Length: 303
Image (cartoon, rainbow, N blue to C red; front, side, top):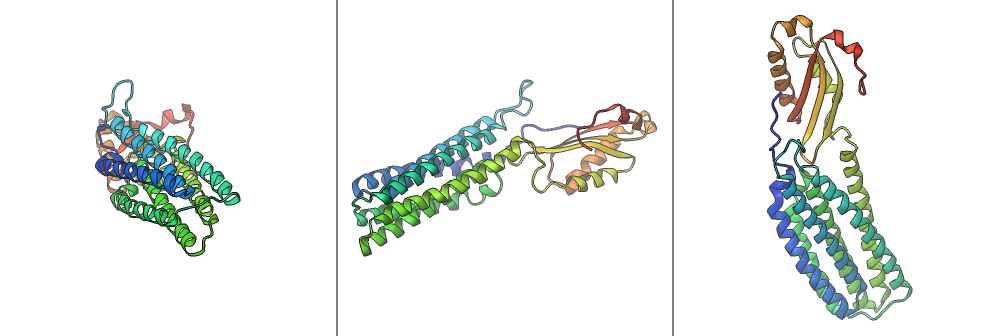
């Protein structure tokens, strides 16, 4: 069955938006670092630290999509498409480490609060809030199509919530003088970061362990294959994901000896392609046609 490995991955269609978010993130990062140092707000520093992980994550995503666009070779028959998933893995690990660090620093600030210039803290936090809102709008559609873009989207979403927490803390300090609000906001930012890291790593693990793609029903696929005229049965049916938006499938399909000797293999393969293309979102399929007499001699790792 013919295949086209030059197909673009889901993240490549959104490289321009990722680049725009990267630039926006770096600008806000600088503003928050300066604002945090001048105002004495650890919450702003914590949010800036998360911005740094966002910038690194988006940069990794852009580099990975560039690698994924490289053509397949004899040494790498799927090209560099899996690079996107490896970038998401690194991204998830970095997010987790920063989240834990922010929580520890926030707790220390609660125990030993410091003076905070609440007005400047509020102004910088509002800038971050608006910038992150723009970033979410840029990545909203792409996060439904690509695991890499989804990682960047979740980071920006966490930053938006973090900026909202800093805004609230600044208002509390301005209104009541309760300085520990700065540390509490920092801990809240960390608590928002860690679960996102866990969720992203879980999805990456699903791809790296080659689990059945979400939304692909192997029992339904098996039924459709067995419904193709001339097909006696199917075994060794596998489905997995190369990278976001690139699910693949392989199967051993049993057909009568007379069908193979009669030159009808091409017709069966065409029917199988048409069957799956019309009912399932799996573009890359590999079918091995074989007579029932060979089935018993094979070692099957999948029923």
